[in-house]
Image: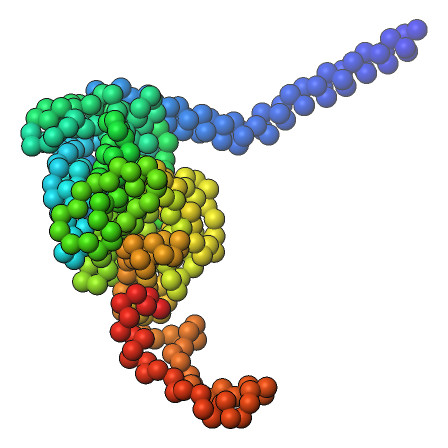
Length: 397
């Protein structure tokens, strides 16, 4: 019995020693994980604290806004702020096309309205003024705002008045804003739309060139090209039969002398919106492939895209690198809109040729099919002079 008792005591001692050893070893395995968890918790707490900072305690800055096709500079802050944005609605007559005028309704004097750029988590304070010369009330619905109407009710403003409201930019993305006073379609059709970029907290990758482009469809009493001041046609608008489909409010707004410019090797980012009010855009750059498309202006990225859909009241971000010099034509690839209604733009690229990627024409020789009659081949009319085709104003290629 004594031996059994002694054995039991010895076994108990070893068991206690083993438990003590395990207890001693566990802390040695935990510090790294504990430190990582603590750092993560601290980061989350810091982000939460920043996100919950009352608007009254945020630093106040004035928004840098730009007329199309210019883009405001990238956000260089690592914290939220209260960003003050001033908007003014002005009804004014401007050139739609050569010899064609239209009485636009605008945000800040042109179509589209100015581009606004803020940071995810910012509080956006909007001072919204309706010019005394306006004939009707106006307002603004921000697709970037969370809440009924996107601010439309808070900004409903009579001529000669100013309204103020604010919203928190909760989600990163590229968003349309537009007037939402009844009849909503008429206000939008007269040009009352623009883009607001809510840049993600981590920012966007750096590129060499950024451009701001918004497509819109216009409904005039006269047919495309009819001279003089053209009135809005509600019947055509309801039937979705525009006379003009244009980039940045005017035929030729980003073509010819107004063309966008870049150099070979540049990375290009285009913020593309569609004010509508009716048509969906099939945005395409002839001669380029989009390396990246931020689908519908959100987080989803598609790659190697030829044309991208931009819904009415929506947006997309496209990125690509230009390798070859020359003129690249921007179109809505619902192609009759481009060549017959005005949806054409240009990106002119300067730089060195790169025949490894694309050459000029290398040859031009006579073609004699094996099954063609000899007499017919001999009597075939000569090909037209290249200059005749080149003179056609709609030949984008």
